[in-house]
Image 1 (cartoon, rainbow, N blue to C red):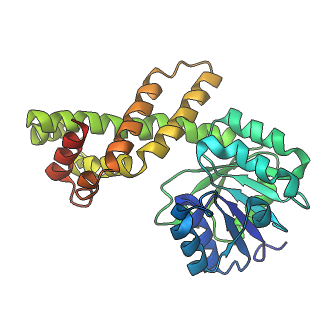
Image 2 (image 1 turned 30 degrees about the horizontal axis):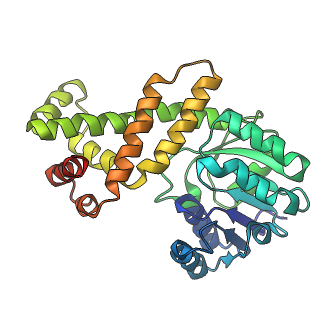
Length: 296
């Protein structure tokens, strides 16, 4: 393998997997394969079409995807991260790099590393910003004993890496712990402004908040945070369960984090309704009204 000719396999072809894979394909990486558990299902048709449109090989199984791969990128749901590794462990040849970009606790990443053993060179990867619009160039943290070796290869592909340290779990710890604030502020925003909308005091609450945070545009924050929760709340709730596990691993009771899980999950379910989806682009009073109506 050289820095510009790796054979890359994606296990999981959802939002993150697609964005990274398509970005790499457009930079000139020729040999990319992808597998997603939805591929055999009707719901997987759009995923397979996205891969085919980008010139990415649609694999027939996880084992087929990783055949002859130099780099495996695992981009599945948080709950499936260990199972994804288990599904390919016995099919890996030549100890490829295994980049675990899943949003899971440090303990879960150590479990996956132990499961793979010498079958792969495991790397703990944390995506540190929304995957769009930068796709494969989204800032990421790397950690683990093989992180320093793979970093120059990834940088040669245009990826933006920061070393979190030689210990597996260090990148995950940063991602998980910051999630308390990132996804917590989203949940607080939703709870605060849904109440403000019901009370008819949205503008007044926003004006009052500007007294404390004069540099923030609260209308934009409300629109952005609620849209993110509506479209991604269920997945973000799963990530926050991993955050809760991270805090427990550190001996901290995740009281606030457990509440964030409930808010993210509830908003994610509400956000699936057509009445809410139609208002997400416009935001403002229409969005808050639709969310409150759907929740009642």
